[in-house]
Length: 348
Ligand code: KG4
Ligand code: ZN
Image (cartoon, protein in one colour):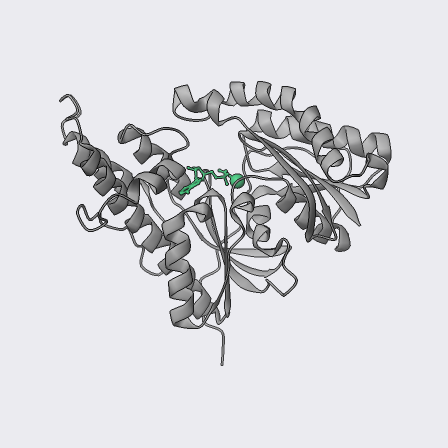
């Protein structure tokens, strides 16, 4: 069964065709990074206009590269939450038009759950149940993912998302946007122990906080008196600060994920979202998983950042479970946070 996936929740216009939730026949992503670069972050109005002009060409290319037409597709899956409302509406409208014209089931997909599902794409052995971490520009969430469509929230960020912290610290250091890949690149030349940053940790909770470390980087670079002119930083200093910051975030994410897995008694851990493309995070997760005897499931780099293959993949599972929407499906900028269950160890 072929599912057409559409994703426009932030600043990527994406469409994909996926067979039976796993086999990616095409995955097209039109990035808007260059448009937002001068502003150091996503400008929602610019994002909407860019989605409008990219949507149809991206859709056509996804079908063309998959060697199919809309007559071959059996359902349309689209991200309808959470995200920038104007951006979401463009993908949702495109999906509704396709579904209406071709009389296809329409499936609304949660963007964060799709990131958690990305690890299962092109994988023929089980991914679920697992402890799953989604770390992106807008979200940092830890789930007990019992199946592709059953994700129980265990913890999330109380302020900035991990990717947002990467973007803001990159901006403080005078690096480009998006900041994650820039810090990843620059940190390779730095010493992570040269400028150690403290990590936030909540007692009795799997929540995260990244605003403190972002402020610590700001104070380290500019001093506590914001009125004072910024001291120019050498290339070496920038690399050391980037490496110290990255190390602190990577350790926080990795420690929390393994803590959740071990308390839940799960033998698999999965990660998703743009930050899962971070080379140091991937390296640490691999080493830690090996030491603890756990199975680590990392999506390939192209399925970490926003894409529609993860949406079509998860859409197939929702369709199998009968979770289908109609043309009244609406877009939601946020998802109502479900009450977090306290983390309890699996009885033995
Ligand atoms: O999942 P994504 O494409 O979009 C959202 O759903 O937000 O994630 C984008 C985020 C950005 O904050 C970007 O800086 C971060 O992922 N990112 C990275 C890396 N590549 C992308 N962060 C750290 N290291 C990377 N290599
Ligand atoms: Zn995303």
